[in-house]
Image (cartoon, rainbow, N blue to C red; front, side):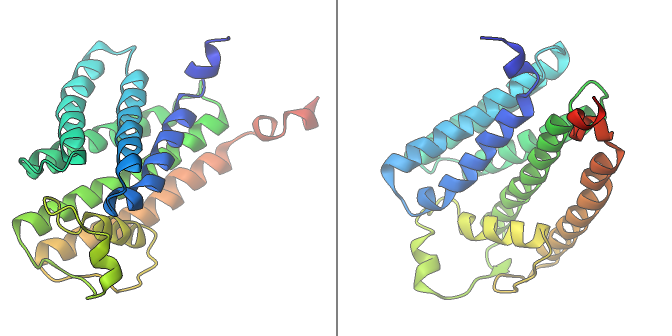
Length: 231
């Protein structure tokens, strides 16, 4: 099999891992054992695929390994309901995703990538931004309880059985609602720090779509999108 299938479409594989991870998150929060394992596997695939993107740069590769190791170990530990030092998971996870957002943003503007790989990379970044803010929101709620106001419903309580990570699934939902500026308002930031982060995420979400994604699409040559039309 041609190795170029993997090397030239690395961000498509990363996007697939991210999509699978997000798809399994509700089942993990609901404490479904078999799907918890699959969620941990998909998280490991995200780490592995992201490390693979840095393989040609030894310095970036070293940094990625250092950041991914505590993130992977702590995630697997928490998947087994051993809530030891949840701060390690949240801080290492947010640092890991922030690092790869920087790496992928730099890669997006390289001319040797296809338009489809660039679009996949931009979508990876968008999803990683939402996950990064999820970790930050959960860390704030962990260290400063009642930083967010949650609706008092039984359905949401059933989705938050992970006592070591308070309301993490709710805050992931809130993060992507904020990132896309839907603004349902069912989960509300109450502290100054949580409100500042929500404003920051909303601005990043809008600016990212307008500047990065729209820029990639508008700058793409017609021959890249419809090669047969120019033959």
